[in-house]
Amino acid sequence: MDGCGVAKAIILGAASTQERTKGRMEKAPGRMKFFASVDLTRPDAVATLRAAVKAGAIGLGELKSQVECDGPEMRRVYELAAELQVPVTLHFQDGPAGQVFNGGVQRFGAILKAYPKTTFIGHANSFWANISTEAPPDVAYPSGPVKRGGVTDRLLSEYPNLYGDLSANSGRNSLGRDPDFAARFLERHQNKLMFGSDCPCRDGAGAGQVSREAWIKDKCVARETLTALKKLTTPELFRKITWGNAAKLLNVSA
Image 1 (tube, helix red, strand yellow):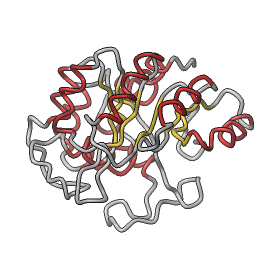
Image 2 (image 1 turned 90 degrees about the horizontal axis):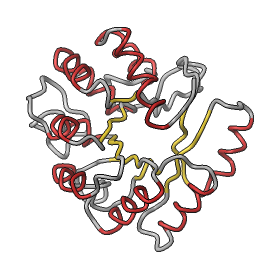
Image 3 (image 1 turned 90 degrees about the vertical axis):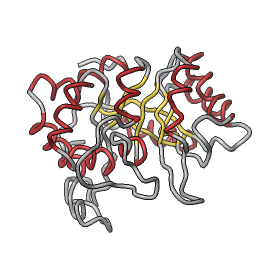
C-alpha cells in the first residue's frame, strides 16, 4: 500500500484466514477493510460466507472456484450477496480443463438480468480479455488492437449492477494493448471501474514481480496500472477510478 501510494484498501482474502487478516489490520488502524472468499464446492460455503460477513467482511470475494459462473454453486452466492446487501467479486477465467474459474463470462448477461439486486464486480483474465469481440479462451493476456463490441464492454453499459476491478496483470493488460480504445473505455465506464493492485511485488515495495510474461516481468503491476490510468484519463476521472467509485460503492470514508 505504501509502495504505490494507497491510503486505504480492501483485502480480498479467504474466510479461513480472516483472524490473521484482522490482526494485520489492527496494526494500521482505519486503513483496511476486507472481503471474504471460500471454495464454493464445499457444502458449507454459503454458511462460511454468511459468518464472515457477520464477523465484519464488507463483501464476498475474490471468488475463484472451478465452477461455471451460472452454475448452482454461484447462484447460491448471488442470492446470499443480495440478501446481505454486499457486493461479490468474481474471478473469470476460461481455458483448458483444470484452469476454468467461473467459466462462461459470455453467458454472464443472463445472470446480471436474473439477479438485479446483487452487485457484481468483475475481475481477471476472461473478464478483461473480453473487452474485445476476439478473445480466445486459451490466451490469458491478448495483445493487439481491441475489436469493439466485446461482451465486457457491453455488459458494463447495459447493467447497472456490474462494476469492473482493474487489478492484476489482466487489468493492466487491458489498458496497454490498445491505448486509444482504453482511453475511450475508461471515459465510457468512468463510474463503474475501480483500481486494484493484486500486486505480487517481491518485497512489497515496488521491486516488481517474478513472471513468465515478458511485458510485465520485474515490474510492479500496481504502479504500472496507476501510471497507465494517469496517462489515459483526466485528473477527475483518475480520482473516480482510483478512489471515488470504490469509496461510494463500499462506503469507505476519506
